[in-house]
View: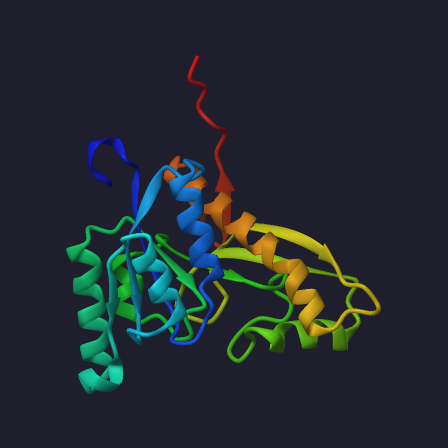
Length: 219
């Protein structure tokens, strides 16, 4: 937890090329008090990634860890895990993170790793389904609705227990760009909502389902 009642300590894992909009949404929600906690560290693979700049702009430590420079996946996972422990992380949030999370990280943070996916899982999900690939698949299949899903991370791509979903209509004239633009704000809302539910200790994983507990009244 954050010191002096500041709430949960969040680590955000980012890619090397993403714009970092989900990261920014999390930072903004923390700073506005809509999340009871703060981003303690942003971890990426490249120092010059846009998301790393967003972190530094908010005086958040930005740590670059590269499997290539470390020489092996085992060394990468070990370094990542030690960094999470160094910053005393309560919740890990993936934001455009393109790597499969290693077993050691999952074991250490079971039901404490979240990801947001730009579709209604179990549609258009899994390995290779990211970014515009997801929206192109939704339009190509002719679905009438898509949206955003926040889920806990398990051993496979996008298969962990679902926390929350938001629905967006798919219009006949949509392109991958227009659909993505309409879903993105819902990603931000769903992600920040899920993180706050975690911060309030209101999420319980029961098998493959997530139960949201009632809020405790302050009266």
